[in-house]
Length: 223
Image (cartoon, rainbow, N blue to C red; front, side):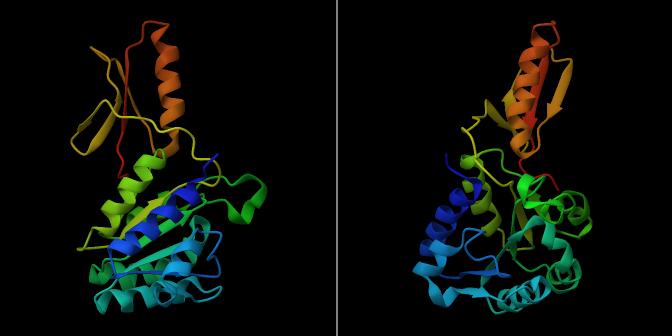
């Protein structure tokens, strides 16, 4: 089965081909975050700064000031280490830096130090930072392109570890959100963040058996 990281890996390499201004940075997580293919194709446009997330983010700010669009690919739990740099070096100057946060959520066998538990609650306080939570491979590709296409401030794309699962198509788009299930005279609205789309759709189906009309929406951008 395809993994979230593999989908990102292919897409960032394709974006790199089309966008020579895109550079990638990481902190001793080159292959685990899926930057291996990008590095093989564009070795002079990828920077591994070692186990130093603050340095990666400050370097990204400098590259953005120099006219590049940096993509900082790190594990979600380690974004906390660079919070000050995200705030003061990137957000304060409204710089176009994209953070790709792999292993968002509970990561199972990686252990408690690697659970990406805090980014979705802590990072929304960073002024101007827009955060996307893709629900499947197709939305990961789309949201990554939208994030890297953003030039007036920082963006983040967060996704979990492991298999990506089948795509979850939208019925239609409504005010920037994807409507995943639309029921006439809905009594309940479920807001599905990222990969919770599948469980929310399953819950809607189960509730329908009890004559509870449910609609499901995916906000795509959660902050």
